Image (tube, rainbow, N blue to C red; front, side, top):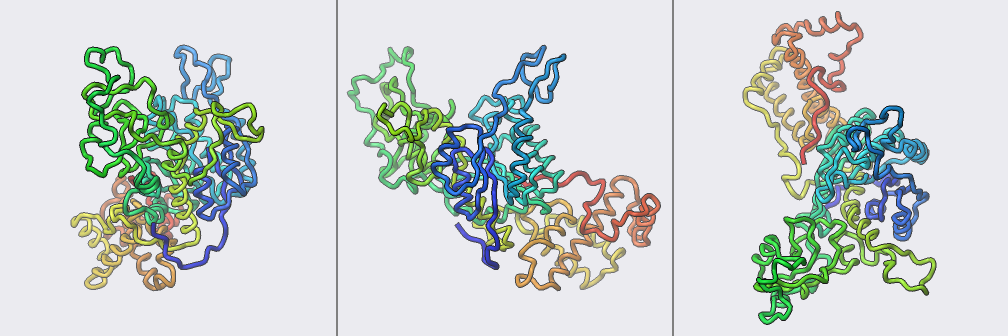
Length: 561
């Protein structure tokens, strides 16, 4: 991982509140990044206990009431429906609003610089039932946004499954964040590119008050590893089983014959398993991980990242399993990771205390021991944010806060190509306007376009659509501050973006049919006079860099993954 270029000392320690804290993966990474956690919250006392055992120096850990997992049925449909608050005279509690009323003042009183967390994702996970917005737990994403809006920390980070992006819940949460004034950066990241040997794709939405959209991308991408992390990188080269060591014996006494195959109820090798075996070489090692769905297999290679871990991933091979006659391998011979090894594959450090299993404890146990059920531990692990990914997120925020200039991303494709993507016709149209409205010609006109390309190159990774937003980004970027850039050069680049913002402003009225596409009329001040007649206090022409062009639409969309 590459660090940011250092240009200043770390001035302050950022204070954070950890919502939906889980077993502590997110908190562990953020603490390693130098962030102080002042409050951690979750509704499950067992989760809080694991968190407390492993995460030290947290001032407050408080459970909160969850939204009910089941809602009273709505008349006529028998099913929960978003927004259905009343049915006849009976109140239907769609979300536990009292929990938000309790939590928001407490969090606000903490005066956090960051709020981070991962609201429950089961409603939108491909591994779940996929009830989406109809799942009552989906409202907790909006509860997260409401708490952020109330406390108004400088930063927030929300982690979830990528399926959340298509939901009404997500759109409503984004609307809340925008209303408060957060510039947003959205990215779908693979944990295996951030120090975790697991091909886990997660949605990261990061916000910063009074910033432009896309501010987070360059900072996060600098911590992206050049190569994905594999199972061998973490569990060692001796973990796993060579192919020759788990082939099916020709005389296997309990192999399921073709005649008995219809009655066999255990696991059968799938196409995904056979594909993994087909690409082997003599040194390839394999291990067993319970499949996550009908299209996935149970055989996995150690020279690749582990699959996304879900609750059932840690289930061992069923005692009912028998190889089919003719199978190439016998799964009873292949390596099966322990729970602690699965914990390492999820990015946790060795020695993470998950407590003792209730089924493995005796009556003589220490009463202070942390005792958990197997399902509890599985859920905690499956719902975790990988600590190395959390570290990269935390360092990115610290770097931004300390105004460090991001280093060049390892992977060039991680950000947009730093050029001004515009057609020759559009450039020609803009040049015509510059000649008439700004009286630029010859070398001055050529320099104007050259400076514009340079300015857009600096802001390209933010994916901003309007020049006014690009100007705001350019003015606040550490890369444009001294000693990285002279004041004169920064002024040149800002001026050229301000000119483009003015042109876009003018064209927005043209596109709306409110003003003719006549550069000479514009240069005479006709549009200014029209606006002054309509609204004497309109100062748009005096402040192009601070106004988004009207009538073009809402803020530009979030950056693509």
